[in-house]
Each structure stands twice: as C-alpha cells, then as structure tokens.
Image 1 (cartoon, rainbow, N blue to C red):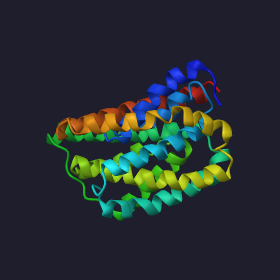
Image 2: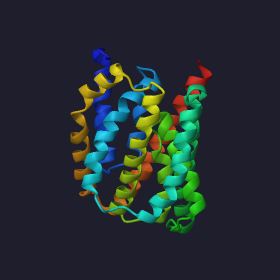
Image 3: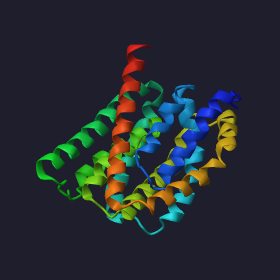
Length: 255
C-alpha cells in the first residue's frame, strides 16, 4: 500500500475529477488520471490502482444513465474495443506508454482543431453519420489506449461527438461502453499480475471518493446547457490532448 501523504494530496482530486467525468461532465477529464498520478508513481501502478475505482464508478454511472445509450453505436464500437484490449494485454510488457500518450494527444488535438476550423468556415460543425469502419477503428483505439493508460476517452469522443447526439445519449453511450470494457480489462490485469494486494489496498482507501465524484458530475451535467456542454467537452478534450502530448514527449526526450 502507498503510504506517502503527498501521493494522496494528488490522488484525491484526481479521483474526484475522474468521478466527475464518469458522471457525464467534461468527457476529457478522465484521461488525465494516469498521467497525473504518473508524476509520482509508475504509470503501470497508477493504471492498476485506478481500475477497481473505475469499475465502482461505472456502477453509479450506468445507474444514473440507465437506458440512455445508443445501442447501434455500442454495437459498432465494441468489436474493435475487444481487439484493442487484446492487443494491449499482449503488448503491455513491451509498449512504451509515452508513445501512447503522444499518439492519443495528437489525435485529440487534431480533432478539436478540425472542429474549430469547420466552425470558422461553415459557422457550424457538420453532423457526421456513424459508420461501421469508423466505429471499429476508434473502438480499437479506445480499447487499446484504455488498457494501457485508461485513456480511451479521446478516441470515443472523436467518433461520437461529430454525430451531435443529445447530451444524455452521448454520455449514456460513453458510460456503458467504458463500464463494459473496464470489466473486461479486469481479467488480463489479474492474469498479468498488474492487480495485487498493494494496489488493491490503495484503491480501497480512495474508493469512498468514487460516488462523490460521480454525483458531482451528474449534478453539473443536468445544469449545463447542451451548447455549453459540447464546448466544455471539446475544451477538456483539447486540454487532455495537450497534457498527454507534452508529458509523453518530455519523458521520451528525458528518459
């Protein structure tokens, strides 16, 4: 178990931020968790101790948005997500986490830039219809990056946000998608020894924060207009992209 008080000064607000994201407010917030905790501990340990907390948060989130998901989008995303999780488990021991951070960061920043450029040219973002190929690709990216660093949010956002779904449907679909893949991730995490007594004990200490963060997120979601909700999502997505890219690049240049 981690006993350093400085770690908990960082971990407590991080877990609350993840809970707020799970509650539906600011989809990009959750992607910051592993990078932020990695400032103090090994990224692999950060991912391991967060997974049980995420699974508990998922229970509250799925209940809060029960029935509000888009089944067609879930069917398009899940096959790719399963492949991504499998690839993450098979390559985990040889994968450079900082390269994953850089890749996800670039994708997130590209998408926000593309959206803003579209607004500048057309004064509005054109609605994009979902497709099977896009769903499989972004689902695989989400599954892989979620397995490596719980950073599946940006790929899912890149696929779902252009569809301009009602905000409750968007959040409900995202919530159920990650609830499913987080449960699936428990199997390879245990199999590869990433979950152990030390990480579980630390997770238990932080666990009471899970429902608090989710409730704050749900509260904010229902009190923010749809327009501001989307702007907030894109804003958080950009911040997450910049954070991931810079952290990965700095770590690669200063091994």
